[in-house]
Image 1 (cartoon, rainbow, N blue to C red):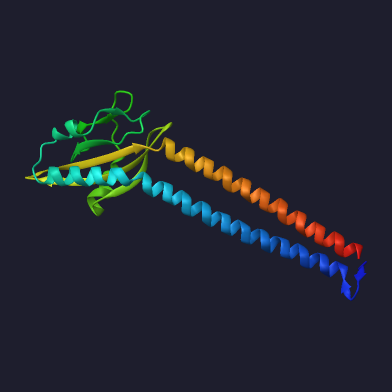
Image 2 (image 1 turned 30 degrees about the horizontal axis):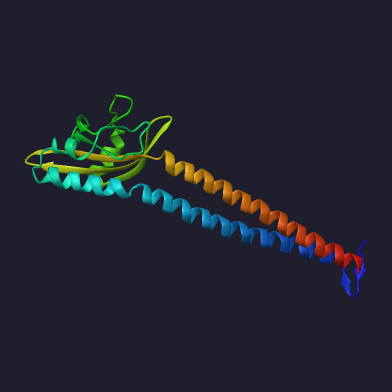
Length: 198
């Protein structure tokens, strides 16, 4: 049964406000989702900044006949399973390790063959490499070639701190969304209540 408030049908008024609530909720969700996506992508893109320079400089040096051994004096040895320091690994054309300034608890893994094939086809690959379940690496791979010898340069850095920031961002966005839902719900309930009381 419809209850009338003035010249307005209360049932229609309720439906209108429910629709407005979901519209407002949708707008809030889109805005917060856009904020999350923008900030998260910024985190991910900046994670590649040192690796881009390291991979390109090393690849250019090797392509001009430079000595791979110079890399060892340029970058310190790191265990990238635990360290946040960037590292470089040089592979030959078959994917065998030539030189590495980073290791994973003493071993030097090789990325999937598909990554190396992508680099050969497109000249570069940027990816999140997971050589072990608990290790994720922001990775740049580029090719090099000199005097009949060719191979690949991989530069990487552990994503642990970036992923902590992403988790914190997710929590803040979710908390903001929950607060927005409660705020909108409280507003519309008050609006409907006071309209009904008139």
